[in-house]
Length: 406
Image 1 (spheres, helix red, strand yellow):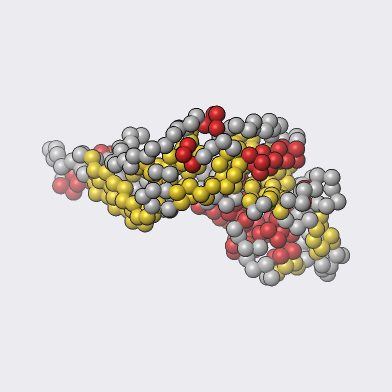
Image 2 (cartoon, rainbow, N blue to C red; image 1 turned 45 degrees about the vertical axis):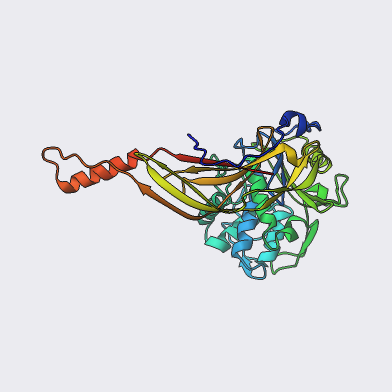
């Protein structure tokens, strides 16, 4: 993709190789096949290992199920467990919900997140959309809206399915969005919950399967505020964990690891010990017009709002003078959906952080060739041909880059 430098603000910066600065502290060696450590506030990735490899998530699927259920249902509302909801393999995780019993949405969410009950996922799916199939369509649409582009689910619980997959990066993105959803931490971070007796079941006490949340387990970590476990033979052991220390909140995702708790501790120790908060100023903040005209293609004009600063975590040894900030865009005359703009922070020529900028306005003018009439071709047919030719003529993508001072 060709980029066009429309204008440049010169910045007197010192570019220090990121390999010497950003990784002054040795990155942890993990048993996990894939892992991500993300700053919950900014979305900045502090550590990544095979972050975009599509893998089976097992019950980490339920993070998105809970997020959507909280967006669509009143926790005080009631639901009835159906026969279909409990029609699941006996070897899967369960809270022993009985077909026909009535529970609050609140209690079903606790059953979903603490013992990772598969039938609870189905109950919530039916409560939201009437069927698991319709709910799965909603899950995939919600994942796409969050930018989890490498995710596709086929059920609400995470039991093995051929086209059921996600990535460590996407799971961190989903977890970050879930943390911003009112009420999510109540279920995500509870060590225990008691389901009241129903006409079909006695009172039941549920314990969280994530041991770092349980004071009665040796893996307990008082700085961990939420978590979710997952396991199938296909996915191996998977863990999503959120910890908060000194006002900072980090998200750790480990996939297919036989040492998932040890891997998670290594990630948190690395993130909390080797990064410091910093405010990165952005010169030229405010409304910015991006645009380009190219003969024979078309023109695009888009307006974005650039923030005046970014709050990031800088690795040990890195200072503001080591950074450059650029606005980069790909402008496609055919579609706003195919156009993008990002604010990107570089250190030593390597990307440290990027943030998507929303288009406040976007417009394009297309150029097309005049129709050439062949014998036997009507003017109407010629217009259709010309329109198709015009579309083909503008497939070239226009690019833009602007550098800002930090």
